[in-house]
Image (cartoon, rainbow, N blue to C red):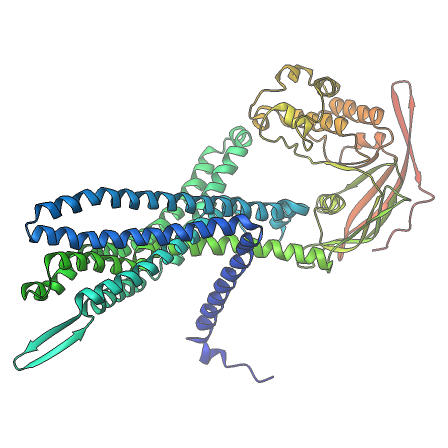
Length: 624
């Protein structure tokens, strides 16, 4: 390989040029990725093709009606010029028919266009959402680097713009193209050649109206591109700022209780103000660009109707063109100019679409990367089934997506029905281990084996309550009608929430109404209803007092005695409900399991006693 260029010599131009070129390549790549995924809709069945063909047909008919209206202009104004009352009456009666046909075609075109947009958006939204929710990728995106911030805004807003605008653009381009071809022929036929005389010299300009329309449209479009060149970048920055502002507002609403208890209103307001200032600054950039493009667009709209009349005036004054032909030419000129200047009117929307398409494509690229890594299995934890153990970790290492080790070489086997407690100081990777067991953390090496056919259920520390009724929260993640009223009432009574039974079907913000301890009780009620084979508790009793924790753990032991239990917790009282304790400790190169202690619990009356001894059949632990 050749030597590297001198950094000092290349600094003024090289790095900046390379950075700009890299950014352009990235943007082109994202647009290609968007089209690669989005155009699959037209291969999903016959309906998209039929809908598209119908829209094309209606657009063709619409242009035909416009041509008939153009011919009507000539006939009507010729009748006026000739002072023919009968001709004026006949053409006047014909106008409502043509106008009604034009309105009907425009309305039908709008209906078909909106139907195409709606169905395309639904299809692409289903595709992206399925990939986002599948295999826990909605969670994994928070753990990897990439341009996929605020995926909820990208799916809700950017995907809408990305599917609406292309349909509008395609319909607009088709109509503009057909109009341009049709009315260029009209202008060429009507205008003919314009002869200019300079003394004894004469100059003939063939198709002068066509040339005038094309030159004018070229100048207007060029001005739009030159003046609004930064519109796309400004729109991208504005969309990102809007997404961040919505995220801050959502966080404020979701954590309202904690903020109120801490008295953090002033700090939250300061954060909101900072985020809003960023939004307004980005809006100011967009407003400047929009003002410039509006000036070009409005200037073009003012000049376009007058210019053809001025161009045709010499021929009209010389008697070479009738009033009807003059008005027909003016109407055709405006149609041609509108067709050629389509970019002038749609450049701002095109900029918005480009920004949105790139943002949704960036999310797709991140999802594709996760899917590819899952399929190839490179740098990922392998998962399989076994008949011997409820759960087995074979030389398991958990890493970040960049390869940084979190847990190193864990090897453990848990028998069916065994109750295991995982302890360790903060930062020892307990939560990462739980996520790996649940299948949410894919990065690492080694293997996790699950008992064949076993149902695993995880209770996180922060109980989740979905939007809707309390019935839905108890049945979650099963359908709302999975369990009958009697089972739900019994589950609530078991966990100490019988007072909520009359409110099962009440639609309320339960996530805000219930306390942290109550939400953990609801999670245990859900667990009793689901009756899984393997239960993973990630500090699921941390918001309860010792008596409440004792009640729920005893209830779990009594109701699901055959279930395998894996718990993460710090309270020493939890040891009474487990047979083994795995101790994790931070070591060079990542946290490791350093102890496997066998706990034997015995009950004498109402007292619990336990003693420790080394588990004789414990697997060999990896040394640090």
